[in-house]
Image (tube, rainbow, N blue to C red):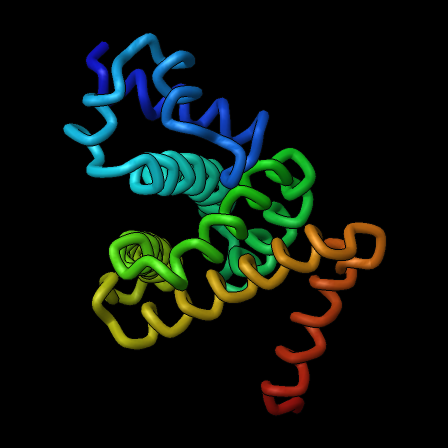
Length: 195
């Protein structure tokens, strides 16, 4: 394993243990058994490394959610959308530390254009990934570039982000999976003409 991978592993662990704002470059070097120059060489800055670690953690989470949601070949697109949000809600408590680190990273990114661009690129890749899943779920020959698939992907990501923020700020009163499923069903029933 090279220094890049060692730094990412150490960064992910430290984000969970210490949070974004409290990690120093020396912490990263000590935890990865690398050197300060490796951070600059592989990532450009400590913040870019931490953002890459957050992104890797979210990509792992998204892959787990996708595997779960796409595991039932008979599920309808609406059932898959609901299952995504329900699974995300159920797994939010185990992601609390990385979500908190992400919010801290967002605050930094608002002042640092390079970090903002890095996180914006993460969202572009996430939308493409989710749009591909939506296309597969629709099964009508659409692909990830189909405007419908991209619109649904944007909605799914926005809902997951909103649920994550609510769970961080007010975990006792954030939506539970049943509330979410009922809300989605109510919108669906109100949108579809009844016989």
